[in-house]
Image (cartoon, rainbow, N blue to C red; front, top):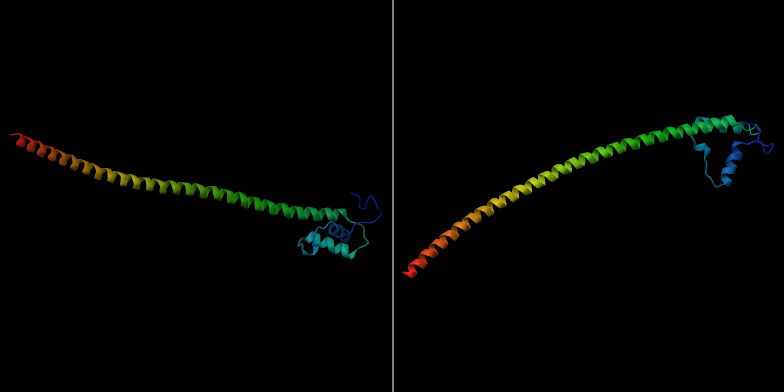
Length: 147
């Protein structure tokens, strides 16, 4: 790349870049960046305000910042993937536990139903016996009355 600006004979400086960013209402605090490459470039510009703009250093700075960004994004994406796997695993465990709980509830209900059916069966048997006893006694009573 050319070291000179193609439109003018003036050279870019970090201050002119910052001024342009401010004019576009873009907040950029270079002093707060802990990037060594950017800090070195800022120091270079402050020490040599009349030096021509070093596109290679700027390119190196952007590459460094991009690499930091890319590594952070990669780390975040891996954490998201890890959390997604863990979430899937936890949902599977929950579904399994929920199935176990549902099975136990059904077994308990079936036990209760079976117990109730046994009780109802016993009551039915007792009622059948009583009906038979009543019918037998009623038949005897009718037979005695007819004699």
